[in-house]
Length: 455
Image 1 (cartoon, rainbow, N blue to C red):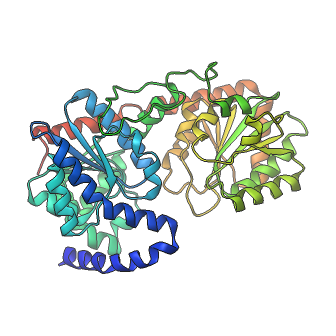
Image 2: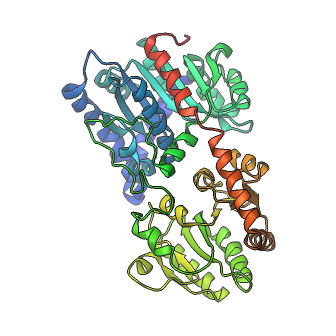
Image 3: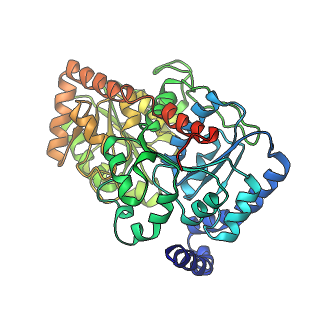
């Protein structure tokens, strides 16, 4: 009854979403992508599905989960080169990184109602269905399980306050969790919570977090046995195979390296981050020749103009990254005016600031700057970024609550080069110690293909 009500509600919402789509660009892209998904999967299935090869359908909700899927699938393909991969995503933001995932076919997730789901299963004929991190879809799980297809959740997290664990979320999802053949959790704490959602305890194990492997491969140029897939070969990142500071670095990195003194790279910032950070930068520059790069999470014209005003009010010279790349002398602060370059820019840094810790949007990932041996500063609202607290506990991260605390932390790190280097080593060691999750999650998927999974 729960699943029937869920499916009826989703079916009723679809016409409403189609009507609203023209007024919301992201919604419009998602609605169009879901409408096209089944035809895309069916066309690929008719032309390229090899009956002799096992196929894994992997679903990731958004950007972060897609990159986790990338690492896990690279590890799986190193073990099983002949496996075919179907990859779907939910959020429109994941579309820009989908090509990195080593898959034979890529598409939005179809609507989670029985008609689209059954047609997608008919097209792909998967031997296993794998969800990444958090998101499982009740009708898709039900229909796959009815066909004897094992379903798993890998790289899985379940916080104590998760909406999935109580209220309407649990009511709607519990039957789907009970059907999972396996759960690979990132920690003991996460693993202990899944049985309360209906997953039999014997089907839950700790596999670690493949995100650390993905980031490590990204910043250190180790591709982990990645296979080239015929459907849409994913380009290697611009800095793949290059060590930090190498001669053949992206233009953005070369541009921001200009000028004397240490460089702070602030990534995925929001106005609340910028208000504190800019005040601290202005105070510190009177004593230390610190330069900064600020990369807003959403570099819209309105956001960039607001950041310009904040910098003007603090008396800091600034220019857009595009202008610096074109030859403008490096100012006190370079403002990044596009997305897609932050991972490269961290390479030029001496310190990092990760945004999102002062608002309600959630702290962004601290793993990438940490993997590059950068001490990382961030606000106190960690949200689901539990690794940030662990990074701070191990000496590679620093929680700052006010502009005065940010200023004090910067002064300490700038005045004591040895302390800054030690914090950087702690940050890199934090990431290095957590490698191996991609291979462990891939092993779980391989067991499903071998028929050794529970259920």
